[in-house]
Length: 238
Ligand SMILES: O=C(O)c1cc(=O)[nH]c(=O)n1[C@@H]1O[C@H](COP(=O)(O)O)[C@@H](O)[C@H]1O
Image (tube, rainbow, N blue to C red; front, side, top):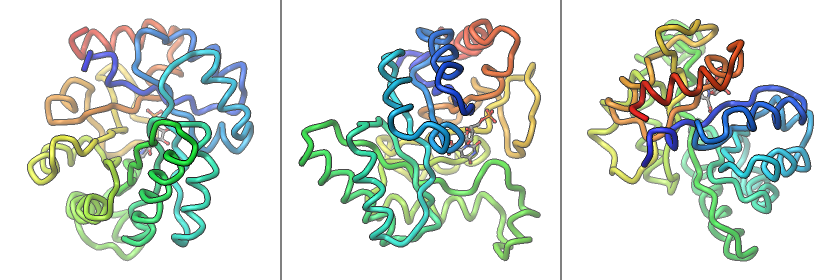
């Protein structure tokens, strides 16, 4: 994989023109775009199609689905025509929900004749600390909870997980090489942490075993997003 292919830029914004302009600025410097809840709630599937058609970059659709298995399977079928490369669900939805998402992704891709989306299970959000976990009744270190959820995700047909860079090295030892580790919470030394708590620089995250890096504000909030994306690509060895 080329260093630039590792990076998915998070287009966390509500407007189509803004998302398209940002995608155009970083094209060639990143491997794909991530469109998530902020954009999807405002623009829906039609907006997603619009951005993708304009930029021709692989799509990571980050909807973090979390519901009963039947409902999640239906949601997966509903977004299958968008043919995202990756789609997120929450690992905390449990074994049957993860299995339902993976089965729906496979079956619907076959039915529609489109490439199968890869299901990524979000483990413990990178904005949560051990204290935050304790506050919601999960009084175990974040790394232990991530490891547990990663095993559940793998055992039930997910193609990979989303985790913080802090857990990557540990997980890489347990999981097969083709199980995708998608890693947000990436902060170059020159960028602000914002609301992220379990963070690491891009080069260190890849060295630890991350397959892909999700990077939003260090690129999109920079006065010169293309320069920021180029700087990150260079840090990754491009
Ligand atoms: O699923 C995700 O992508 C995700 C999971 C997670 O645990 N933490 C996390 O930050 N993300 C997403 O990754 C992106 C990070 O953006 P920045 O903090 O601006 O780099 C956001 O779009 C988040 O929604």
